[in-house]
Image (cartoon, rainbow, N blue to C red; front, side, top):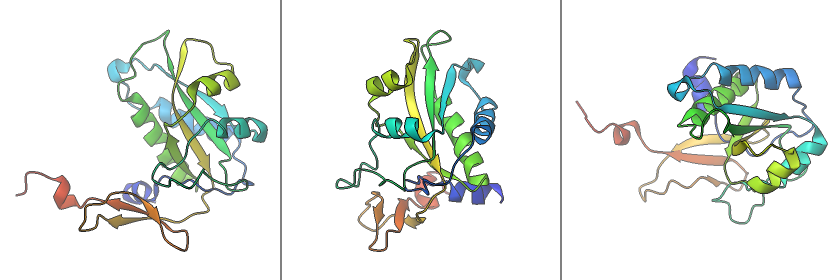
Length: 192
């Protein structure tokens, strides 16, 4: 798969084959990709909590909110929940600022996941206090994001933004998830 295909297939997947297990070695390989990412001032203040065990995954799941545009959808049902999570942490012993390091690191993680036939979703709607208690994190770690990972069981397709300008993602009657994207011409402001 070339880079453009990786980028195109790197969607926010929210439904997975929960029976597909992701082993610790795979999670470590994904963190290796995050480790190689650029870091503001090369400070490298991010740390990662990895979860692949069903009982801990179930606890993490209870702290997350899924798909804000789907008001009547509480998130994936049992059997369609993630097989693993990566909790992205800021280590305050290193820095109080992570700049944009989390976005760069998570993009590397998700592109690596796609290359392995997996998919994921970055979640920022988190009950951080509850999750910190579940993970028994020391006070110097601040939860920034959670990356949910698994073997996707949904189809996510890119579509153009309609004439009404609506950018909200949606699902059709068959459960296909559509993500409207602005056109390339709309994004480039200096046309030649």
